[in-house]
Amino acid sequence: MTNTTQTKHTISILVNDQPGVLQRVSGLFGRRGFNIESITVGQSEEQGLSRMVIVTSGDDKTIEQIEKQLYKIIDVIKVIDLSANPMVGRELALIKVKSEPSARPEIMGLVETFRAAVVDIGTHSLMVQVVGDTEKIDAMIELLTPYGIRELSRTGVTAMVRGNA
Image (cartoon, rainbow, N blue to C red; front, top):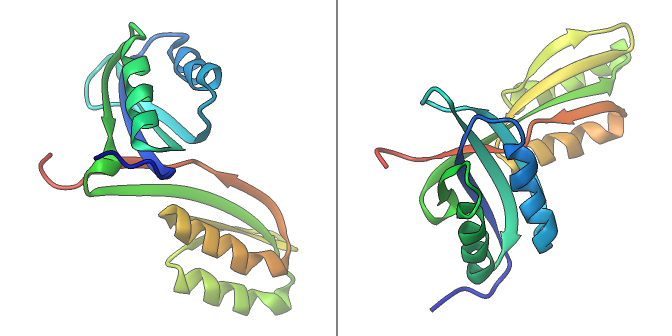
């Protein structure tokens, strides 16, 4: 029986490292009305191949349709719904937060609690680097918001299946 509930899926796509592949893959999502919540692209373990990790939402039938459509793109080698297996997913965020010297101890306490790191200190700001799952990043942002977030940059999720798979 298929799941008709909209759930978040993390899809890994192994592609030829060629110009235009990212545009063709993202264009497929746009043409079909599928939303990309997050996309990361980088080298894979094989020379000449790149790995895309896309987070999208949909029911089982929608995800199956996305996979079938992706395989129609000539440069797509392999498509895996990582969410169907135990997986590790991580994201990185850089957060520049307003930080007067009097507020720094509180902010440093949050950074330490989240096992994050201060990677830059300015006269009126701190830049915090946090790595973790999406929920951890969201929680860190929420807790830093009252101090005044000046700038935020997130990488998007990258993921792999756990173990030997």
